[in-house]
Amino acid sequence: MLVELTIRRTTTSPASANSPIDGIRILALLPEKWHKDLRQVNGDLVIRIDTADDTTSDEIQAMVTAALDDPALGQWRLRACHTLDSGSSGEGAP
Image (cartoon, rainbow, N blue to C red):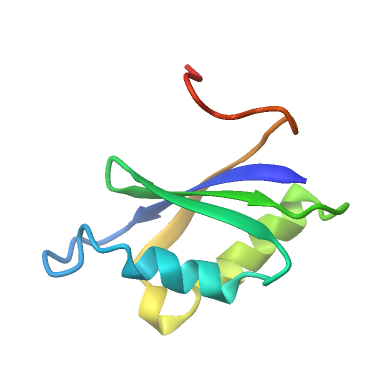
C-alpha cells in the first residue's frame, strides 16, 4: 500500500516551528519495515509510506494516530491520508 499522509501542527511553538526533529520522531515510531519519505510543505509534514504489503489505509492511519499520541508529538494531528497508485510520484499533482 502506498499512501501520502499530511500531518499538521495544532499549536504554534516558535522554537520548533520549522524543525525536522518532530518529523524524524514520527518516522521512528512507525514500523521499521515500511519505506518512508518525509517532507515539509507549508508548515505541514508530508510522509509518503510504502508498506510493500497488504496493509490497509485504515491500519496505516491507526498506527500513525497511535504514534502521534506520544507526548513529545502531542501538537501534531493527522489531517489526511491519501492512497496513491504505485506509479504515482506526486510531482506536479494538482
